[in-house]
Amino acid sequence: VRSPSDLRIEVLALFGQIAAVLVTDGESYQSMDSDGNFESGPVAQGLLWRIARVALKPEDAVDLLLGVPIPSDDASFAGAFIDTRGTLSLDFRDANGVLTDRCGFNEAGQLSEFVRFEDDGKVAWEATFSDYREVSGSPFAFEVDLKFPEVDATASLQFDHAALGAVLADELFVLRPRTSAVNQ
Image (cartoon, rainbow, N blue to C red):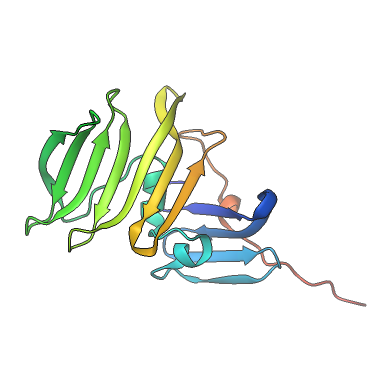
């Protein structure tokens, strides 16, 4: 991932084989499956769900993976409370007073959860953050679990390693379709 919306996802199949690869800059995407089928185009609603079974927009996925989810554009801070687990939760509401987002922080002050709500108050998606390790002098969550109640789906993302502030080559975010051999 590279902020603000560059994302490369490798979807793993049984035994860790790559089933598909998706790259996006938030506006356009490219994907290729294990059979070499290539497609590209503008990012549309449901792209990450269709390819990786993750019901998020690319920019939301990048923010979550980097551990810096951002409350909805029209939301403002509306209050805080400590729940029975000792989690400090911050609520954000829109101009109509509707709860849009909730951020939870553990006793160490690390982000432990982020919840996005639908207009009707139902949970749209939820992310939990754990296995914090120091990266470049800052705590970083090496495990992110996602829940999508509406589609009854979950995803667990685990980082093997992370580097914050590293320069990532543009080539990581571009796929090249396979070319067939030409008989001469």
